[in-house]
Length: 285
Image (cartoon, rainbow, N blue to C red):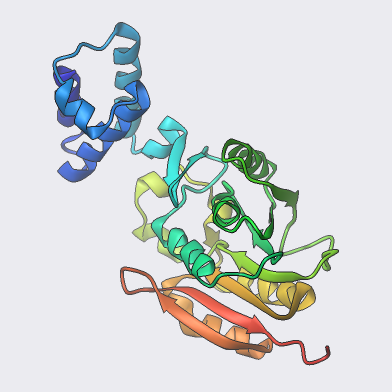
């Protein structure tokens, strides 16, 4: 096994920083042999069989093409849970974990209805349902492939989340049968002009449908979400969004214009404006 570890380091040393390569080593052997970091140290003189060596070589070749390790292994971790991922869905990010954590720590009431719009892998609603068993959680996406993956993840993590197809920009049903307590979303928010700043492992492999918006309409999805919230949130219902760090004040202004109150703009662990929360006050009720 030591020779295999040296092979990984040698083949990737000019493409990735050392700490990322060591992370690859741990992930590969966890996936290949179910080894912990301690096992890697204690069993370094063990030999891999031919099948395992072939798999390892294939993984390294794909990493050399900048393919994300999560897509190669077809799995990732989010909020302490394991999720299947494919090129149909974005790889869940730490910033989204912070958004989920915010909702959980706000302690929604028993029976609260939660909807995640643009669910992708299902990481948001599944993590919420796992932690908030007393809530009623649903999620939607425009992509059939994403919905299939999300349902697979819900089944694997043994949670009851209802999934349905919806294009939030052109919803066939503007009104849901039951009013929501929470509307959460991590929609596309990266402008096309930001593509030049992105790494190949994101730009070449992750689904552009879930990433990008036109430069002349960076708040496209947030406008649709604000309108959808007006139509479907209970009086006093709450929205939570993940946002582009460049458009925090613009999102605050958008929410104010649409009658939302108690708006909170929150920074992530890197000090960037990445999350927003607001309450819907339906004065007509």
